[in-house]
Image (cartoon, rainbow, N blue to C red; front, side, top):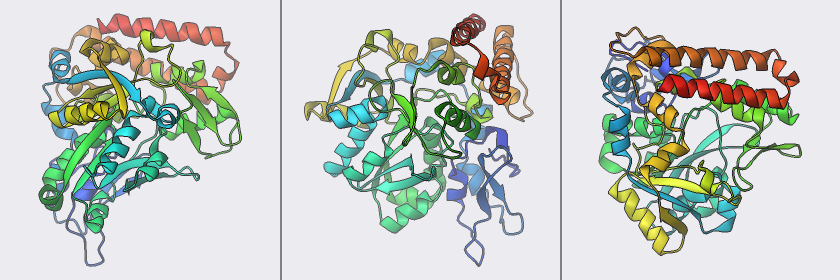
Length: 419
């Protein structure tokens, strides 16, 4: 996050790179005053070179974070009202449905929009065989297949995007990312004159509870007996999918040690705790897993998705008529329940307090219920506890039944403090 004094707060910076893309005042060598670097935690954050910065404030205007934290009026009720037309469904291309996360819905939408010339490119990211995160503008449906897996690491989706768009003379793009990426794209477009005047975006956001740091990936490699920095393939191979490495072992996505990483918030960056859009209502379409018991029997692939705009609704209806996807109506309540009602309430309440508790912000909080303060303390303790168990390898010796009990107990405590 960049404030009006051009001070950067790493703890609440998502690394989206809207700020670096907005800067339009490079020095005589073409170097921008603001660049992404990796900080001590291994996360991408911006740094400003005061020797060449002109203090034009465009980076500040492009940053989506400060206004969200200090001026947000989001409540659970107001957030629920923003959720659009809700669906259950899956891609009718069996390969997409089986190989991709979320039943291939995002992949199928991207393919359809390219093939019907409704966009001239798709912006998305993937992990290459060297475990690098690559963001490209894909122009063919075949290329889009690269993005079918999940990443579960920080992605600076917007980094270098403005130049790629201008070089390719793109006029209409589909952008697939997390809700924070789509927020950054919207503020970037307002701050960047070229994008504002020349490019139209359609957006897909993935439901997102939290992303992870590199320590998460290292722990997964330990479970999979993988080499250091070896690429991990997350999801795919049906639902809820498998986590695997090339030529090695695979584990179901519901593996206890793996799944506890989510309930405990282990290795979750601080910036995820200042999110207020877990379902991605900021995008035209948002897509996520069908974590509802009534869909558990479907092992091929099931998805929940939401049309949050008329553009999104039109695309989904066109694709259903064209038999590219199967859809049926779902309820807003079930969409929220699939992401855990208590969790969504936590993420859509008192964002200012979360910015103070998990970040390094100095803000004033009023009228915060004691139960919410206790919830924050529990999350921080539970996060520390499971991270410590992993770092000291204690978790390697804990029986699975004990870990399951720990998971249920921590879930009940979360639920109790959420009331």
